[in-house]
Amino acid sequence: MLNKSIKVIELVALISILVILQTSVWTTVSSAPHIVCDVPSATYLTIQSALDQANCETINLAGVSYQENLVVARSVLIQGEGHTSTLVDGGEVGSVFTIEGAVDVSLIGITILNGQSEVGAGIYNIGGNLTIRDSAIVSNSVPFVSGGDLVGGGIHNAANSTVNIVNTMMGFNNGFYGGGGLNNLGLATISDSMFLDNSAMTGGGLKNDGTMIIARSLFTQNGATDGGGISNSGTLTVTESIIESNQGGRDGGGVLNYGQLAVVNSTIRENSANVELGGGMKNWGGFITIHGTTLSGNSANADGGGIYNGGAGIMVITNSTISGNLAGRNGGGLFNGVSGIFDLKSVTIANNEALDGNSIFNSNIVNVTNSIITTSSSGGNCMGTVLTSAGYNLASDGSCNLSSPGDLPNIDPLIDALERNGGLTDTHALLHGSPAIDAANDSHCLPDDQRGFLRPVDGNTDGVPHCDIGAFEYYSEQIFLPILFTAN
Ligand SMILES: [Ca+2]
Ligand SMILES: [Ca+2]
Image (cartoon, rainbow, N blue to C red; front, side, top):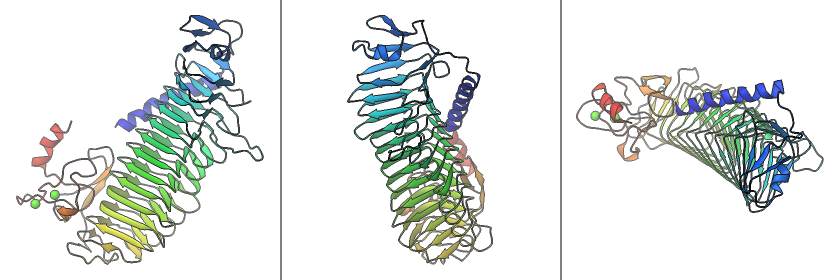
């Protein structure tokens, strides 16, 4: 719900920006003073001339279009009248903003567009502590220059630099080699923001080689050769966000990871790896934890419709759902390569499809407990190396060779369609009478389910509460209603 409202608001903002760009009703400032300093009170004809006044702390911009390429070498607040009216246009002749040195800079309520530079076409931040709020960074691009770094279409945030992006739209930027919307080597935080239709060879939406935290944000329709939405080689945490409808021309439609990545309470859906591996995610040698998250409807032309894990990558997945993903070759839900490790706990893997291994194609180690593995497609759930079961898994057929205590092979889990059942992500509810109810190992289950609803609950009303197998905890009607009313 939260994420949906973000999306609607930002799309409205985006449309208004596009209307402005197309109608070109704004003219470049010429003679009238549109730039005002608060303290000391003064007016200027260009933003740069105001920036050159060391004691001008706040620069207020009018609701017009400015064409300038600005160098900010001191701490300052630059404030527009809103991103639909105040435009700073780089004129395709350099970065729009270059921020130099250990300065505190805030950009609020402006649109930054038409920058063109081999690094950081919209904003090039070299050492600054930069905050961008209620703004838009659109249509900036890194052109090919022989021998150039060629990264950071919207923003390049250098090492020892900080960028905080709040309630901002990054759209239609091109980063050439890396980071269509943002290329980060320093520290970046992104919240309540949207990355739309950005592109680069690696990391269409963004590329992170530093440290980054993303919260409540949407990545959609970004494209890259590898890592359509996000490429991470550093340390990245993604919470309460949606990565949707991005495309990897080759690998990692939604996310490509070489580094350390945590995905929490998020949705990765309908991304595609058009030629090779990892429709939702590709992990190559990195460490990923996924919790409270749904990967659904992703597709890979070859292996790993939901997730491809290789290069000695390690993936720990808890309280999550892998549903309706498609691989043209092996591993509709999950593909595990010759040196990869998956650790699955309280996961629901359902309705995925592949040529071989609809749910899981394994070539090394997949540890699994308290999880549902189900498919209705021909060819069965599991293919390749036998899973390492710690018991209490439920599978719709016998192809996963589950034979540890509490394992329930060859049984229909009786799950409902993927939909919102409370919480921040879609889940497969257990239907009344599901054999998964109260059938998990309590010592391996977490204190809540994927939705954040408490476990264990006595779902079969025999007076004894036990955890359920899979990501969802079944509440019979008697106990479900009062919890719904007290949840908020
Ligand atoms: Ca239960
Ligand atoms: Ca019970």
